[in-house]
Amino acid sequence: HAPTMLSDLLFDSRNARRDLQFRLPRMPQWPAAEVPEVDVFVTFNEINQKHGTGVLLMHVFPFTQEIVSLRVKDTYHGEHTFGFYGLRLPLSNANRQQIVLRVSFALRRFRIRRVICIPYSALDLCVAIAVRDLYDVPLCLWIMDDQNLYGHNIPDEIFREAAEKASICFAISPDMRDGYEKKFGLRFYILPPVVPGHLISAKPPAFRRPAPNKPRGILIGNLWNQQWLDS
Image 1: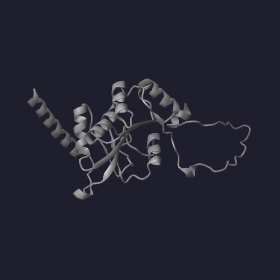
Image 2 (image 1 turned 30 degrees about the vertical axis):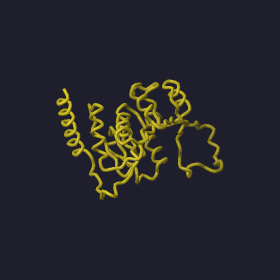
Image 3 (image 1 turned 120 degrees about the horizontal axis):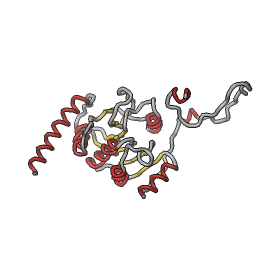
Image 4 (image 1 turned 45 degrees about the vertical axis):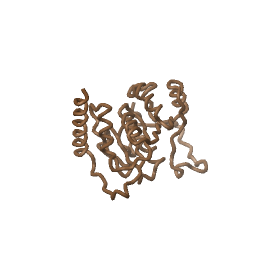
């Protein structure tokens, strides 16, 4: 059975190289002595200013010269503005072994320092675990969107594997932290959303009193699109 497994592995490796060579952006070239040390970010989709995860990551990590960004899906037509090198891995129907091969090939010219995963699907976690295991680097999980307690994109088994292998786990709110700690029995810390300092007023603004016949309201939370206002 061993020769069959080896031939399957070699076949998968050749396919991984072929798929990635066709689909990845041109890899930067450096002399061997100047290969950069980078942090790898793993997300579900593109990082840009059009959704909350993208905005938050760009606020927290404004200097991206040492960031390589891996994603598993394109939901914004490939519009990605985070890291000096970002790519989508072709992982449709890939198993865990194939994911490892694709990750290894995609990162072959970098020295990996750590991996940070903002998971939204099981594939995100599989990629992050592959980076962590391949390069023996610290893994950080930052849970922004719940896809396990009440969402259903991430099964318990893969989440537990990632959380147990992580050096540190963050959740975006106290409620989310408490829920994950209770379910998995692991320590989670709070890392809340942030905004740039220049957007926070140092003194109360002067509001004009609205006309008595005009409706007034307070917006708390996010509006994803115009439909939320029209409904």
